Length: 252
Image (cartoon, rainbow, N blue to C red):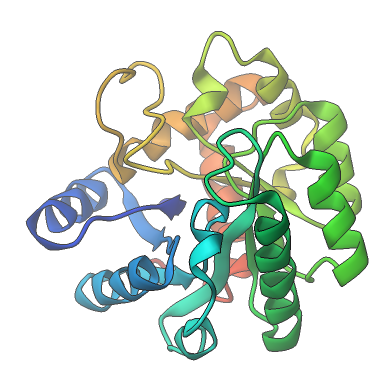
């Protein structure tokens, strides 16, 4: 078995190649590199095309939603694109007006429902509004809340809508007991792990640039929160991520 970093941002060129090689050496043999704008989605596809065991998503992040979705419908048809997103609402920074964030999110939810592709959600300080849009548009059959930052109450609301939860290095932070409590209540077959690299490096690598090779530390944090062996988290998250993205179960 091996680790699956279900959400990272691999840079193009030599750095991305180095991160990929390091990850493979660390037993992280599958990665999904995530698009956050039309151009960065194209970049994610190019990176995935160059590296074994890497797939891409195509989507528009709430920060970039004011730039529109023109061209996204073409990108989601690329054979290496395994999901739509990341998309959602971010009311912490409000880099795009909230009305436009909501419209872009709703359109991408509809696109996921229409294509049957999974949906990758980013939500920050906008839980109620995120749930309202999902309930109105229909939560796609395969939906994940990436970099989950809520507590058990938010976890239960996500799970009730059929979504999966993906935990990042935040689960290892001393000041994030609510995230560990959410990991504890989340069924193992509904749980994924990610680095969200280059952000949010897990303990004991805080203060350094994050990268996919560190996803086993995230898995260890989840295992500690759930009181189970880390190998169990490795097996379960590999299987869950592979099924979520429609990939085979043989490591590549």
